Image 1 (cartoon, rainbow over the protein chains, first blue to last red):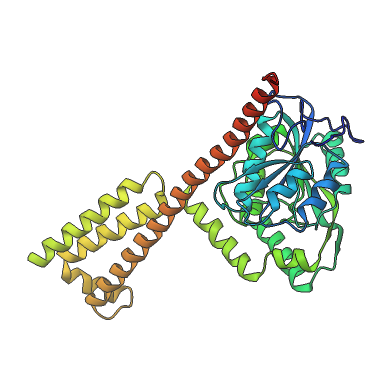
Image 2 (image 1 turned 180 degrees about the vertical axis):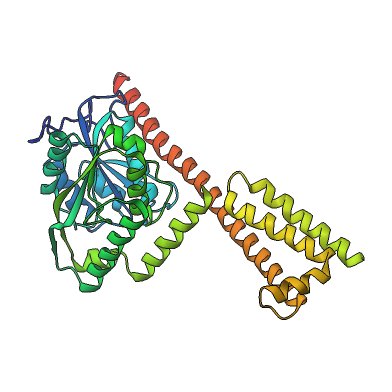
Length: 255
Length: 119
């Protein structure tokens, strides 16, 4: 049994009865005013416990979407106090995000934060994202490592990310400094606009396309991304970026 | 004449298959239909094939036919790929529904356990 905080230090209220038993919410009743953090995870047994514990210092409602991991990710996330939604087959990070967003919306989330499971994000940045939503009245607060910090980033990765920023500007018209940051917060209205169809890594670009299309207001918030050898190994390389472009083109042909 | 009829039937089959996909995949479906119509045109008007080939800088009409055939084959492959992606979207929706209902089912079981008095 997991003991959960009743109210965090930035006004994040737990979902009704959350965490009293195992990995499922004790009630599916909608609760207004709750923040949910969605963490897509695939074979992250070495980091997931630390990630969930870190997040629970700020918010009790953590939804880990286990993308059919073959290791102990689901069990460790559960024992760390997260709600675990488990895909029956491996679908990809984009699909996991959408599942997590759907789960959070079903549980009455008023705000949803997306957060990576590879320890490259800092839970301490979440209050700033939520504050941006609350104080500026926007529907999306997008994390930017180039407004904040990107520690231990390779030059090649930095160039790749800058190219992604340019690509985003050309294809969506959004003027961002960081186009592929997995840390973002959104209001319920914003979350309901998103319908991620890119199951794999092209979802980040797709989300921005949908934000641009929705014309809902957004703001960038400085965050820190800490690159470790683990997160670099899990991250995207040049070959992935080619796949992303191909997936986006295929998606465009389908509509 | 026999070859023309056979090719025309094949191209009609291709057009029907593309037409069936037109709603889901309009761009590629339209491309396949156009290429197949053009194919049918040069099957029945081979003299025009040579003229058109010269017009676009291809030496012989037979080469133009070959290029059009390659175009149709590639477009069909793309159509199949996009169709597969559409199936993947359906599988994703199904898997998502299963994942979410598993959570809901677990919740009900736990609620029943809590409500059952201990013997």
